[in-house]
Image: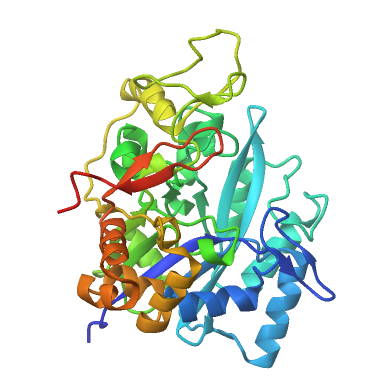
Length: 406
C-alpha cells in the first residue's frame, strides 16, 4: 500500500552554542541558549519545524548531551533515521571546514543516527585541534576526503551557504567541481543557497542546475531557527525520507524553499572595506570606483554574475523542475511587531509556521491590530520594501512596498 505523504517543514542548519557536562561553548558566535534540548523544544513549541539539522552534533559536549537524552528516553532512534523527540526529528550533523586554494570551505555532513555520528567524530578527531568546538578546520584533509568519509558511513554532504564570500565552495572557486570532484557527487545530497541568494539567482550558474537546493537558517540563536526553511512532502520527518525528497523518488519532493529576499542577506552586494559602504552599480561590481586598490567584499549577486559567463562556456545546463522559492520576511524582521507582538501571535496560533502559513489577515488583526496584520501578510508574501545588505550587514526592511499595500 502506498505511503501516506504529508507536509513537513525542515531547517537543516542550526548551530549549538553550549553543550556537555559541566558545559562549554560549542559555536563561539552562537547563543548559549542553543542547547540540544532547547533547540528541539523551540522547533516543536514555537517554530513548527519538524525536521531540524543540528550541525555541531559531532563535538564532544554534544555527543555527551545526546547520550544523556537517549539514556533518559527523551529522544529515541527513529526507524527511518534521525533522532525522534515527540513529533520533531533531530538530524545529527557536523559542519566541517577544509581549505581549498588557501580559502576556507564549509561542508555540512548529515548522518542517519548516533552510531554513524560517533564514527565520524572518531574519524575527524586527529584532524582538528579542539574537539569541543564546532566547525574546526581539518588539517591535511580535502573536501573529497570529507565526502568519502561521510559516504562510507551512509551520510550525505551539503556544501554550506555556497555563495558567501568567506567560507563557501563558490567563495573559494568558480565551480563546485573544482572543490568536490564530480565522481563524488552521488554523496552530495544538495547545495545550500545561503541567505543572500535564491533559486533564480543560483540557476544562472549552469553547473548548479544538477543539484537540489536547500534553504536553511544557519541559526546562531533560538529566534533565528526557521529564518529560512524547506517545505517537504514526505511520509514522515526522518533521514531516509529526506533523501527520497532530495532525489524526487516515490512522490517525495521539495515542495518549496522559503527564504529571505536575497537583498536582506548580509553579503548580497559588493562592499568596500576602505570606504565603509556598499558599492553602487550594475552587477557584477568587482571593485570600488573610488580607488582601484581598495579592499572589497564581493557580493553574492556580483559573484554569480561574474561566474556566469565563465561557467556557460564550460558546463551544460540541466533542465530540471524546481520547486518555488518563496521570498518571505521572517516575523522578527517585521517593522513594529516587536517581541510582545510576536508572543501574542504565538499564544494565539501556536507556532511561527502557523502564523506565516495558516492565519488569515482578519485573524491576525484580532491579535495585533490591522496595521501589523497587514505587514505580517506582506512579510508572508515577501512584499515589503527592502534595502540591500552588504559587507556582513543584513539588509533592512524599511516598511511596506508602496506598490504592494492596497
